[in-house]
Image 1 (spheres, rainbow, N blue to C red):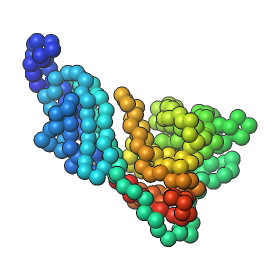
Image 2 (image 1 turned 30 degrees about the vertical axis):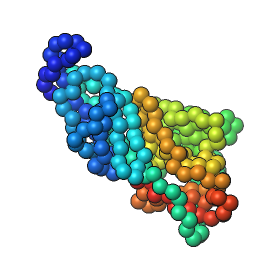
Image 3 (image 1 turned 180 degrees about the vertical axis):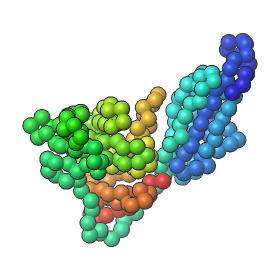
Length: 254
């Protein structure tokens, strides 16, 4: 960190920094309308304190945009930004099976510390600490899915809401609330984004709620029946109908 002249404050001020990284890398950076000579990943030093409008863009991908505050002697981070491909679904041969969430009251937990239940009477997701047999939290929703890495997060959802439970700090966060029906929620491993499978489209939404919460409609369908993520998480397979044709499609994500 150093000092720079602030034209607004008319004095030298201690500077801050901005750390940026994207998946995939090598994205162009625009700060307050000025395109930078560098690309992601990067640590940009000696920024005068204030709000910075950041645009990250890459050919063939959808833009990411957010305004973040830079403070003196501090670093602002946006280091797990997913840039989604601007691509179209490709029709493929029917898959023999597509993964579906289980439709029963006991939901599988991949973490020995917790059990996850659907309380049918209250129509909520209940998280139990297996060690103490105590109720940790209760979230609106009737389905739930874990994201394992980089940190464990549980996502509970109903047809119109998605909630996040963080076991580390035991906090619940509302991720989104929609008028449209949410059919399936798919966390993307190692990334700070979710895939929302709606009746007629695939939508990606980021978990970072600072400033604006970016979301992108990735593909449009007549109707979606089901969807499953590939093992490497780079492709989504969608079962449904598109342009009047029934079948299975693949969609490259990033």
